Image (cartoon, rainbow, N blue to C red):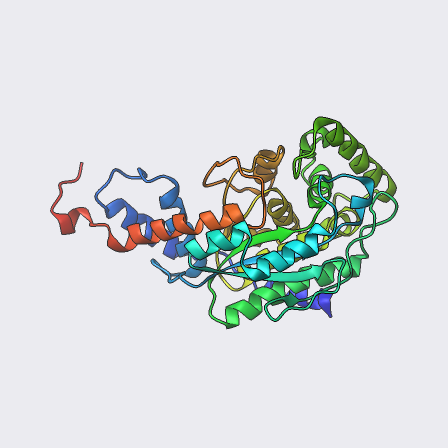
Length: 351
């Protein structure tokens, strides 16, 4: 059932509306400025027009989807924080006390936390529960999850977007919570982006160089034990990935199927975008890169997906914090399209 849901969702993704993009380009060039002088704001305006088919779409209803899951590889001491922080932070999100909640309130966005694989029993009226399993297995000893579990987690992301879309949301941002997920993301990058392990493995939550070298060895062991197939993104995801990463890949694919823009957060979210780009290449035009993470390897990972970051703020928190900041830039681009005078209306001579 999950395989069928995933395939039909992928098949429903249409190409962006080229006529709307061309119309946006013509309008931008008619505004009282040199052509292209607003840089990435103009690129955002063209892209959102293509995604929605509207010159100035209403994207005021926006949601940050924070996928949460635990990682068995934490048994190997790869993080500065213990695994119990994952469920504790889920409660923090639900209480509105995390950084992403603060920034989302500023951006007038909703924060929706999804339990797709937390290794704890969670119950809260605001929690979206789509648990596939209680955390992944230790990937240095066995596959992180079964293939069908990876597909189920992707499907959970698709269904979350569909639920929020039915409630009126039209723009999304990706966020995540899962102690150990930079290790899984680095493994995915090594296999699917052909990135050297030394470049893919960073400092994560703030480990020192000695712990980073240990983390490199952990990723090497996981790859040697599981031998993921680089030509099969779902196989790689199942063997060395994470449930929340799979869920975010589903969010990206689901948003594309509904013709909604989705802003990709940092390193872990971009690893999810890499998965989505491999199994549904047509979903990439619906993604906007948000920021260049301080986590090493993120620049190369963005390039592998085909995304360009809007901002560079030396951030590495995750949660969706960088993506939420970029809601403001989308708003700015749409206001330029809506409110800026044309040469004709302002009576300004063109070159």
